[in-house]
Image (cartoon, rainbow over the protein chains, first blue to last red):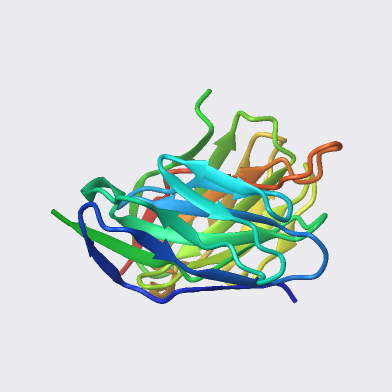
Length: 112
Length: 117
């Protein structure tokens, strides 16, 4: 079945550092891929998405590229801020599937 | 456009009490979902509804019932609450099942924080 594996956290960085959170997936066909962010005490918000191979999703300085050859969708940001502290979830939606498959989440803390 | 709304935001129950969590969406989405999130864990799907009038079990359905009242509303009921049901509950909706839609991202409500003592 479909599955998502995320880099285990927690991850702690200093402000302005470069961020990578790894995400790899297993799926049949051509899934859509998503990154969600959950700020403390809130629900999940869609951060970015990519629906086909080689697509790059981007939002708020974050980017992720859909790599079918390596079945990966790593999240990157060039210079993180304290306000980026949150839990990040990678997810996929199989073709025609009603449900999303989520990774376990990666807690990110940015220190000033 | 409020998106997905949930009530209540917080609730404390005694073991054996019952309650219903309410969820509504104003995005005309076909599909709706209930998840629970426990500390240090990801999301686990409790039930989902692919369209008005249909519901299906997710990963952890035991101890819960759901009702898809109409296209907008999807409620979750705990008939006899147990301490193991202490969690944060999230409702979500998506356009999955809509003709012509190819990307099924889900939109989440703010959550209900439930404590069962």
